[in-house]
Image (cartoon, rainbow, N blue to C red; front, side, top):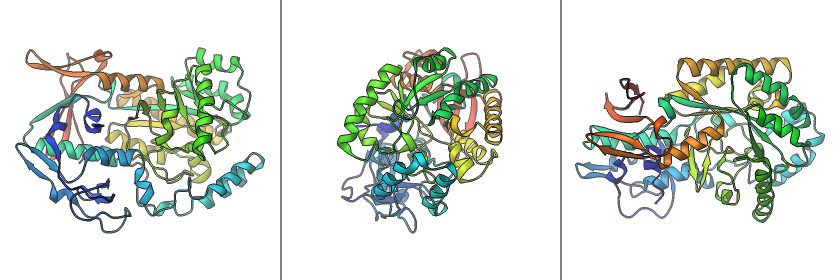
Length: 459
């Protein structure tokens, strides 16, 4: 059993209240779990739609609840994993450019090195036409999985639980988390990295640099040493950034062995695939602790889909840190937007869910004045989030270590109170889920010397 619900609300023992009704359908499809809350999987009630738009059956009325527990007309683990692992794409009725136009992709990346940026932007805009009409996942941030888990929490509270304790999502009671990541694509971007580190230092911004190991640019030891010595983080980005890493299963296995070699040579714990191409079922061949290749919602990426969550999650033994905000390339070159408006919308939606803000900013694209000014404005905004909203601004590796520690922690009831035990437990905070005006609300203990603060969540 995956037990994704218990790993999400770590330490909470309410997951055993749920049972699965008999005779789940053989076919999988879309259904609602309350108005507007789309799920994908098998169910024992109603019909399942092959598409996420149109009339979809709502199974909320088929949930049976009493003092003994809650009986669900679906497998709650299966639904969460189908969404996070993008298994809904096989029947969503919408084009997945990562698979059904493989020959076009191959041709594009064959010619890409000789294409000026203006020409590439033109082809990308043609390819992305109609993105506003994609009904699922939800733009600009999709919180389907997070709201789904909260609805299960709500059912447990409605079934008679007054307060459900769990280990809060972030260390030291932080309201949310933010990470900055830099994908170095070309030689010009590599040369700009020292200046970019100066900019980040000015705003006290930790960041990771994702390095392409082969063909794109030289990767001398001096370059890697500068990144490490200045307190930044090194991760591996793809193998050679040719857009074909996931094109063939056997070739992926061959390439993954080479990528793993570079991970050891670089001392890298994290990975990101070029262009955010991905196949989560193949990740078992990559020897990394964490990945950062899965978008939350991928309307404006070459490969459509999205993991529908703003929280880290495990893919086997690898932790996924989903990309939850729009890339700088998308913002500047596709949408022609140099303001913080879209990033701010995404920040607010993620804050509401206490999630992870994962930014991708390429050194290649912020060399000039206007995009660089936009990046500095973003850094200023993140500074304020850190000081005013108690957002934890961290390196991706720090988030990986925390989430793994949290996954191993235990919630123990002793001497009349709950406490957290396990490595890293000193930074953990006890939280309670309660009912407030028919919604789930969180009470988070900031420290043993402070009173709990209340945070309402809309469900």
